[in-house]
Image 1 (cartoon, helix red, strand yellow):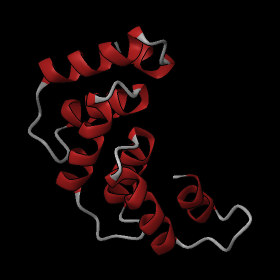
Image 2: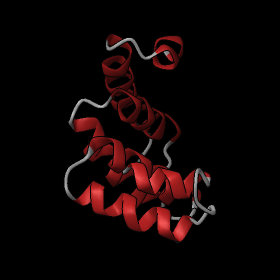
Image 3: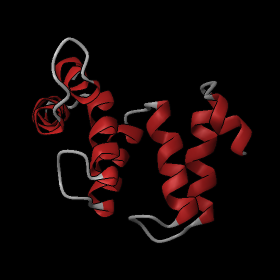
Length: 111
């Protein structure tokens, strides 16, 4: 995932979202929660891939289910706003609370 993020941000290489997605997807498909979370963001933003909120939610959920706090917070926001998944405040609170309990400051604030 680190190589993907280098391309995403243009650190040491020219910024290239297509290359970022390529390398991030490889790591995500191997089970990296961090890469899954990053790929979810790229799908939501349409960076290097067509914008696709349901796919963004899918990748984010995979990371959240592994206990990755940033993904848990994002999944809570996805449910709160109803972006890519049906709006569901119960699920929003559940995922936001999981992130908050790990010390995620934004999740703590959101609760």
